[in-house]
Length: 363
Ligand SMILES: [Zn+2]
Image (cartoon, rainbow, N blue to C red; front, top):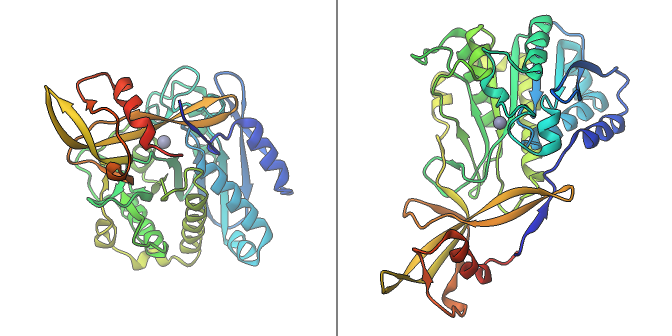
């Protein structure tokens, strides 16, 4: 079966190499250990009064924001802009809160717990380390850095949500508490800064309240918390372009914190960001001849890639993703100019349907 390797795997060994390459003169701190006793590293930069706590990869398979936070450190310690920001800010970054998940390339930690649902229970050592750090550092602002799948769109369009944000709710009523409003203002400022084009966009994540989620929990403690989701950029399955856009957003955030320019933005500016849709699929294959209960007709069929860790790399494995009319493809393949030998029987198993579609999917 065809598949393609992408540069999405970023295990603890790669993090350590990247941290050494930074040549930062600040000592790495170990804030705790994972279930499998891997160290969780953090770095504190700057000595300003306004404190920002950021953490990435609490879901081990969401690596782009970890890479972007390393880029941020590199920028902060090597540029005049960085020197200026670090005079007024104190920034603590936790890289890879789930080193076990990073090693396995899984959302869950080694106990198969979703750390982003463990904020109240604090049952896992990784979450205990985050809460301990949060209490000791007492941040003015938290940055909760994640990554999202290719299925998410900017509103009802076929544009991927390359960057999505959320100012999480602090209660069931989703009230605009003072902390939540500050997060909304920061997000509106960062969204304004992004150079959106016709083929990609920004999304605003669903704000259903769940106190077990880290961002909701910290917002409920009156700390403004911003969820970042690094998403898909067209054709960029390594997410290099997304990584640059996340870095740009992080820098915009830090500049806003220094000059307090987030206060120029309103709740309405935040609400104007399109909702995150979830109707995108990696490949849309049009005009496929299908057979359905002996009727021969044509249909548009969809394929979604699954990310699988194999031999130390992430491979994109195509899977059949249905033919629902509300779906839209990121890449569109028209079969009209291609020879289709047999009609696809769409009541067959997904594997059999995919075997028919293989010839149309060119990596
Ligand atoms: Zn996540």
